[in-house]
Image 1 (cartoon, rainbow, N blue to C red):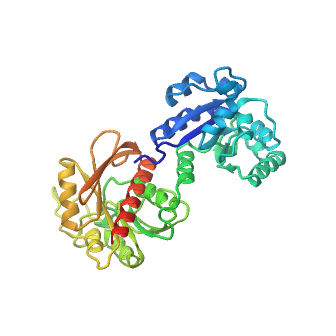
Image 2: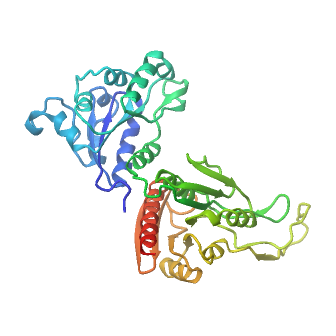
Image 3: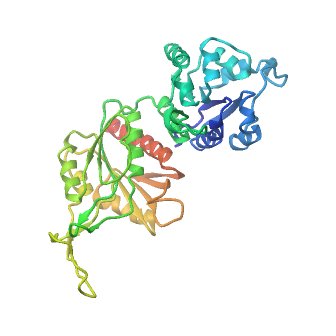
Length: 403
């Protein structure tokens, strides 16, 4: 299930150096299942070629207001009717001004006047242009008319200055698009998620941990919040920003994560265990650093509490989703884990492959449940998180309806 399957996105590109990001944005939208029609202003073609956008979108880029090949020669009407959503990225200061004041002298500005579909704009310009009172007034006018503004972000700019005015990154815009189409299947549902690794101290300097970055769990938390859920995220030590509308609880060890989960799981409708929790911890933590004094060193380990099994055994308990990171026989081991721990669903992936899994921005999953399953092919973890959460919501709703 792709997050934007069969959605029609019209991507407008205006003149600005940030237009180079539009090719990546187009690719991301297509990978999420959308049909993408690119419309470029004359200024945009000086920064990126139509051929590039045609290659990544799979559609002829539209440029001309008066196009004899369009329906009755009225391309702006045809496109205005076709789109489910119009996204303008980058949106230059000039285009913002023209849109705010109803000017229509090219294809993109004209179709924006001729549509009743939602319009979103990702501003991109020099920081002083963005902060100019005229630009700010124009943006306020657009917002009052229902046009969404996504961004801008702050940071280094092509002109060498630093400040607000950068176009949001393609993945951030993709996330906004997905959220716009989400119709709240998890409204008022409590979702509890674990993410990241745990650290098990050996001494004040050393610890046992793993390669988890937390990206998958944070993407799932973001997707759940965008579907209307009330989300609590229990995170091991990672360097990631907290998704909007998500309550975050930071922990380090498996025991701390167990305590945080068990103190909150009573309110949860769905529990998703994406965290890579250490199976073992040092039986005794030394108070001082262990010195390198022998050729070998023996550390006695003891089992950590099994968070997933404990939650799955609760009566009544939440709809419980586990993860399985395997190096071989992925489906066999994942299904065995699902049955052994009494899980409603399990998401499995093969680690150790180049370009996916731990320490990668991409992943692929096999999702299994009683009597069924679905493969989610290799994708960016942001997109994959939304696809997985949509599948969890679907199965949760079906089971609740059956119950």
